Every structure is written in structure tokens, then in C-alpha cells.
Amino acid sequence: MAGAGVTLEELKKRLAEFAKERDWDQYHSPRNLLLAMVSLCLLIVFISMLFCISVLEVGEVGELSEIFQWKGEVPRGLPNWKDEEKEHLGEELSDVLLYLVRLSDICGVDLGKAAMRKLELNAIKYPIKPCEGSSEKHTQINAASHNNANGDGVAGSIYSDNSTSNSGV
Image 1 (cartoon, one colour):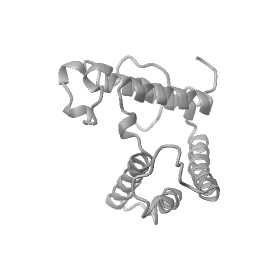
Image 2 (cartoon, rainbow, N blue to C red):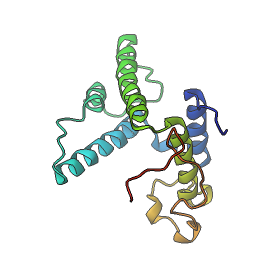
Image 3 (cartoon, rainbow, N blue to C red):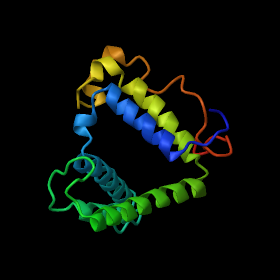
């Protein structure tokens, strides 16, 4: 895969395979996936408040959340949604994706490579057997199965110019 870009289709397939191997589809409802994104945004807002960084809102993820607000749990594929609702959802999902792609470009991060590397790290953090069918956090799962929890051995820089971060961290 060296030097080759990652398509959204390939990433979608790898994510689906990862979830299926661990029997996690049962937890990956539209609502739960959205809540995971919102939780990440709230964490970013909290951290920015700690360090006095200005963040006014969660932006596009907030707009995405509004689509699901008051709908409760919805089934995969959104079979009871109108075409207009699905189109609006597609527009908001696209906004989130476009901002991620643009941000990664500005920061010099190869987003495709970073996503594939993150899947590799998650496979180490969440091995199939002890995680199968479990929604527990990796820290709650048998510690003996995490002989590589820090991601050691997963090679490849996510930076688009193959340099490393100069943050000193």
C-alpha cells in the first residue's frame, strides 16, 4: 500500500470488516455513531476551554446532530426517511468530511494513511477474540491480550511529506 492513496470505498470496506470481525455491528447504529462523533467534539471543546483556545461551537457536527434530534434510534439504511431527509443528511455528512480532508491537507497529514494506521492500532487495541460482541472499552478488556497497546510496531508516518511531528511530544 506504500505510496497509494486510500479510497473512501476501501476505507468503508475495512471499517465494515473490522466491526464485523468483532461483532460490533450491533452497536454501530446511526445514533451511536453520531453520539461518538459528538462526544469527540465535546472533548475538543473542553480541552480548548482548559487551554483558553477559542472554540465557539461544534459546527458541522452540531448541524449533523440536529438531523437526528428527536428521532430516537433509527434503523440502518434509514428505511422510513424521506428522500429529502436522506439528501440533507448526505449534505451534512459531506460537510464534515470536506472539513476533515481540508484540515488534514493544511496540517500536512495524509488522512488516508492516518486512517489505515489507526485501524491497525485499533486491531492491536481491540483483538478479535476478547472483543468479539463486547462494547467494553479496551482498558476493561483482558490486559493480557494487549501486548502492544501503545502501537509499537505499526510503522509509517501519517505526515504527507513523510516527516515526523516537530512538537517534541
